Amino acid sequence: MLGLSAATLAGYLAAIAVLMITPGPDMMFVLANATRYGTRAGAVAALGVAAGEAVHVAAVVGGLAAVVSASPVLFAAIRWAGAAYLIFLGIRALRDGRATAATTAERNSRGGGAFLRGLVTNLLNPKMILFSVAFLPQFVSPATGNVTAQLVLLGAIFVAIQLTVDVTLGAGAGRFAGRVTDGRWSRRISRICAVAFIALGVRLATSG
Image (cartoon, rainbow, N blue to C red; front, side):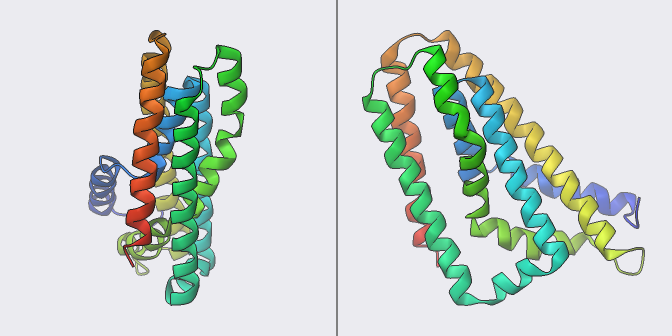
């Protein structure tokens, strides 16, 4: 398949499976939107995250990601911006947790910006840059086919699997939250998400 052997593809899928079970900012963002604003918002957030991943893959193919990762100043700027954005999301979730539980209409309208927030969350995640630069090329073999085509295929597979996982998790979380009408539960979810986002932001800021 475009120069990828069955063994290489199997190894790649196994590596992705390990990555998928490790919670990160993207997964937390999707779950937070699904539980707070509903299943539709979770799916929209997952689409935003997937769009960000597609941009990272395109950057690898174009060579931009290698330039960013090779520049300590630029990479640090992205890391700090990502940390600040995660903390901002945490503060926002904490504020939402103090508010009265939203109605269904309010939940749908407030979750409308989930795509853009998911996109920004992913683009400002420096680990995605490292993943793109260091992980994808390991499964490319210049001797067996076009390198660009192999990178595009590997990236497309990752984006498709990540989107499927995030949409599935978001749908489950959204349905569960939809069955719980207790406002206190909704506020607890917001607080948990707030703590998780702030913790992820602090960890990112201090993981230089």
